[in-house]
Length: 91
Image (cartoon, rainbow, N blue to C red):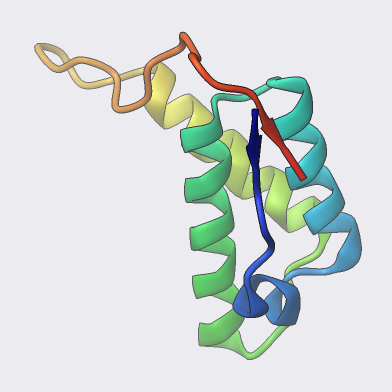
């Protein structure tokens, strides 16, 4: 079992609700950990670029977009995120 610490930048640029969603998705494995981590990174970038706090709705939209991107790779290329998971993540 892995433990996921929340970085200061994530705490600064994501709302409590958005961080709660990320933790829930990591714990329940609704999405692969790589997709959730990438969504966290992209949300921090959005927050920093716009000097805003990313809420749960925007975080969910970023996560869904990344999941769709991973599920529909271009022809001749494998998905960027494997569907199988070997480790369990918790917050």
